[in-house]
Image 1 (tube, rainbow, N blue to C red):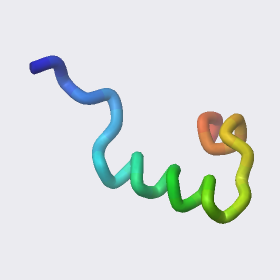
Image 2 (cartoon, one colour):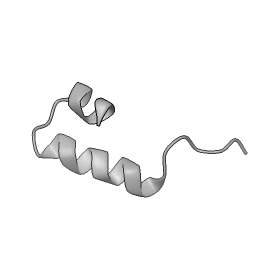
Image 3 (tube, rainbow, N blue to C red):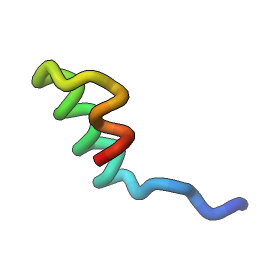
Length: 30
């Protein structure tokens, strides 16, 4: 299997930020 680009923790963190109202662009840059 190819190595995942992001860990599950990073994905969960980004999803929580998105739910908190951050734009996707801001999350991707952080």
